[in-house]
Image (cartoon, rainbow, N blue to C red):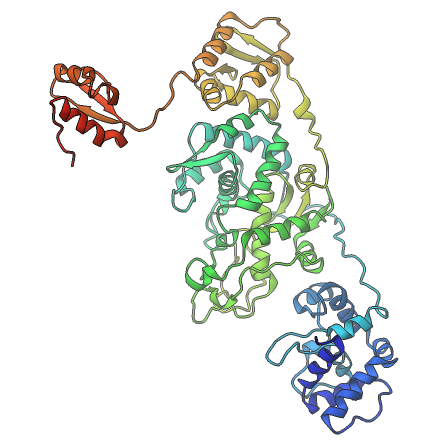
Length: 592
């Protein structure tokens, strides 16, 4: 088994004499470099084994020391150019200005720490043997934190502050109502909603942007509508029947659950089961939907959980600028990749616009913005400060095909966000969520005909339960709905939550007689009919023949009378029925 010392010698042997000599000469007090490679490798290891390593470390400038420190403790010895540049703004000269053998002698000091890991492998890493010797000399870097920031006061023109915590609860009520009414239709193949549905839904949601005047950001006025539909599709309580989203029996019962618990469950379900890759929403970057581009995309759940982990380290109720958060994702070890083969992606034209070396903000940054706006903010986990998506100082203009693009995605206007109390609860930072409106009991009177009359506007949590059992009438009151009660009961639900809700708010000791009768009839009749499986309908030539077959000893046990001249049989018993029919003296036309 190769020891760490032997592995280090092997790494040194991969370098040429011309690569080893400048490194040796850069070591303080190392002396004259031997001429032969074997002696040079031995001298290099011997010098780094003694006090020379500490002298070399102490002689490094501050920036180079940080390169060693962060690589040593944060990246298993690897130097991460992207992360280091995000934290310090520029790279040490060894990584930024080295061109084969032309680097100044001073730069080679850092080269004594970092080496290519193999003959044909890229990157620079501190070998394990050096890492073991360095850790007693080098202290760990301080923990990376994301401090809150102050918003500009006043906010610049066209910049808006968007609070989402309470709005998300109201919108969830709307979405559940549309689910109950069967109004949410999506493609049975892709799961995507049509433009007509997005337009109708966006009118009810008070979208972030009200118009689609930017041709580089189509659909900017439907961000929340699209997000809600995709979040609901990922929920265990929603299923797609043909092309319509409907609540499952468990979803019907979920209507009586406090809103904050429902939102937390929606967030957790979406992290694991989101229907689409959010990166597909970055329309300007092409090549991701077919062939090698699609197969090279990384697992979506890994990216979502990386960002969720970064959000858990954000200050609750404190504003954070998007650029600061993006840098934090890199610096705190929450970075993620979009694709394993970036050359499959391109802008405008495949041949010229290929993204060979995209910066973090081009791919990961757009994905990060999309997740924050379309999913975290839609659910009320974060509040936002937004500008129009057009960027005055674009970060993509260096790429071919993007010279005249005013924004790279519909999400480019995100300036700041802050984690809400609801967000802290959903991310597990707080063990409980206290929403006063959830515990408020608005006085209520139940009148004849099942009319529910509140003494003042009910809370969102109260409306969620009421809308599950009643419909709003023309007087802005509510009336118990037989259809909704039966829908709840036939799926295994109970009226106990509704009875408790009414009892806590209505001081009268008894409900009106017709309301009690409505409850009793619904509970008695909710399962009056049960499916027995598919049946085959047979048409007899006349009623006499149908009666004779239904009553004959050979066929009576295989069919059921279904009207004047019709019979029902189970499809799997068709062959047995035909034989029995022959024994009874009748024949059956063969179906097409």
